[in-house]
Length: 287
Image (cartoon, one colour):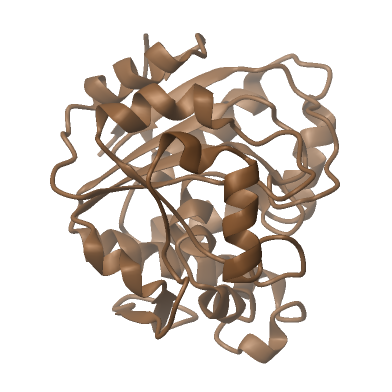
């Protein structure tokens, strides 16, 4: 069955809200908004002012988790200071999900590589989630979108090490690469199961560098801004973003796709589809 993906070339705060409404699912209760708050020094992350109307519309709480690499977000103290410097708590309530332990352990019933997803314990406070992803490249995953936000993004610092290490946190930077990508697909399934489908996905194709917002020193964007996508299917929305780039005639296309292909980035999508919680087949409705 083809999943519905809504797409608009217009990138504006108002169009974010419009696409969310078109998806047709109202997020209720205590709504977590998972986004990337941006590493200190990164110039490409989406700013809070741009996302404010969308987050206000769902009465959401911005949620983040500590990183597993050195930087300004790998401890609770440093991360909270970075969040403040980047202006997030000027506009929103912000919840660092793994600010304090112990982690919440989510079972992965259909995982290929890992059987437990370790997430910040504060996830238990939320009834639904808006996964608000900045679509861009990534140094290890090839690209970052909805599936990365569900997996690495929601995982605690320890959980990130487990995913990167394909089950062995001691091998965080040395595990088999495709096993790491498959572990991301596994971890994403745990969050989907936890929220029982009460998730909406929005990908913003803006400021698209080959580097992630987690990079303190990142390349400038190599692609023109392309639009906003929204869906109830995290696999379809990520596949659609890649397809849009493959189909474009942007001069930066080859550079971006070299990053994706050299890291076998599409394998995360392949692994997620094999687990059955979404489809690579989609209907793109242009708005």
